[in-house]
Image (cartoon, rainbow over all chains, first blue to last red):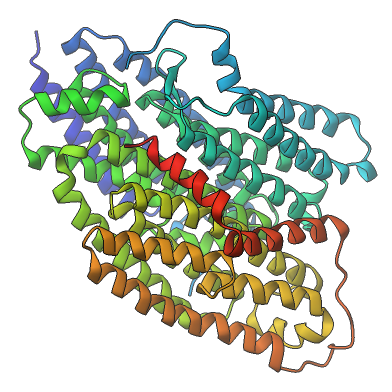
Length: 100
Length: 484
């Protein structure tokens, strides 16, 4: 059996890559993908711990997180489409009409 | 305290949530059935529905002295959650009244439905006693608010504000979720009220616990717009429809505080010595950043956004005091701040509606165009500044008293200095309203009835909280006692 620490290392790496992606990339779609990576890092940690404790609540948590992430992305894509219609770009650096 | 089996009285504990669900469904059905010219009435329906839920909850949902965990430990039915639920319902009802005359929202059934859905999420946030429930409640609050912030689809600023809100919100909640996963990993349970005991027994280094606490705090700081997670607030408030900006700055912030208080005091009591200084520093930074950046603002919505960041700093003083008095002070402050800030954003709504601008220059001559409106603005801004006899004054006194009581005297002094800075920019706005002349000052502003009712309620609230504060103080004391 794969030891728990392996899963946690992988999940930490995924989470870190997700954070880097959100901070460094400028394409809105890629940012959303990196966000998904962060959510899934947490999901991996949840299922790994659920296996370790033989408790179901971690696995149930993952189902809810997946649903919520899907809802979030649905709203996000709708907003991206609305932005694309007016700006013809999904580069987040273009979103600069609000500042001060 | 374990969660008992299901019994029928549990239904009473979630009566406000059931009511909100029914109201949301009703609004979306009537939105389909009603004709275009009737749809403005959806605002009346939402506001009166929310008021009815408040009354019903007041009669049937008032918790017993002993807190109980209901629905398998998912929710905790106690005074803290009850008081916060009342605050959210009141804030949402006022927002519905303001929305009725704000062009993009007034005839859109979905706007009211999303408002009700966000309120439902908030009521769950205040009472969640399980990590799963808490995460779902936070997301249920956030997602409708993302849509509402970006509601004006054709408007660059609105979609941009919605997108920024979503980006910041989703990122911080992912970080918070990672913190939750580690908490679950340490304890093997998702029940918030069991976590503390297990964490204390286990041999976890303080460093690990503080690291997890920081991850979780990211999500909560975003909700209350505390430094360093405040960047979104001015942009989102400026771009979103004004009534929604008011709702974000009051009810949504209050929901964040409800969660923050419960989580810190219940899950992390053993690391208190580490997070009290941390919270005090965050609170100081929040006050200073909010107030100094507000000084330079020329747009009233942005000014109020920075002011609301600073206000979160004052409320954090109460939480950092970690005493029954501190929590009482924060709850009282939040109530006073809710009515005050909603009144201020209400004035911005009506001025923006008639002049088409939120710039400070649009407020010149307001005292001559609409004396009543200018008066309301005066009351709201002075209350935000902490001048007696308004609610904000009592709130500030309580918060500073709590800090002094808990030996955080430096924090209280910084808070008082900051309120003086804040008073400067509030008075600058009032100077424009009262002393500056404008060309169109003989044209009175149109003030709709729904708006007048909401504004009257706010002003009465501000005055009552500043004078006859006894009952509300007692409420806050009871709410705070359910955490200790």
